[in-house]
View 1 (cartoon, rainbow, N blue to C red):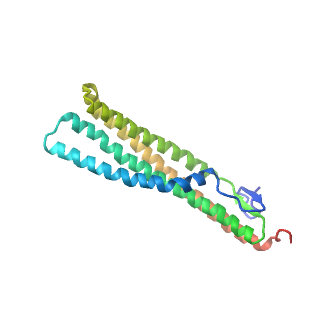
View 2 (cartoon, one colour):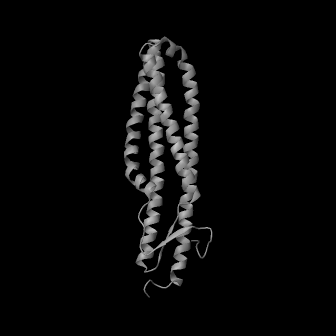
Length: 212
């Protein structure tokens, strides 16, 4: 059904406020754990970076330096993946508050409850977020695999270390760019939710109470 004031909105009608949808429930549960993961990953990256810097300054073994050259970005970008996931889940949580809060206001006013359906921007946000997360995690895993192979004494892996690092840097950049693009769509969805709530509030005085 379309809004009587702005036909661009699509919404559901019910007698009571609806609960959170699945992405919003997931966001409410996971935003804090992934934020904690980020806070744990970044210090590990700093420590590994310091160890690698010490190896470089003391002319350490080439395989150790090369292996750490993969472990350091693996730890750091695990942190980036986690903190970006926390931001994404926080956006979903905010949208959930608009969904349930707006419904409760309408229910308390004794009016029918109109709940905004998931906009296209929200679907794009979820899709881009998933792509970005998988891309960054894939880069992290490949860095760990490369570092482990080098640390295990593989001469072939050592010879290809720099090439792998360059390739994986491109993968990481793509993941970061995709995450940032997803945030734009997530914030656009918040704007849509705010506009819908404003429209709905203006409609309430002109409606009859349920059962009235």
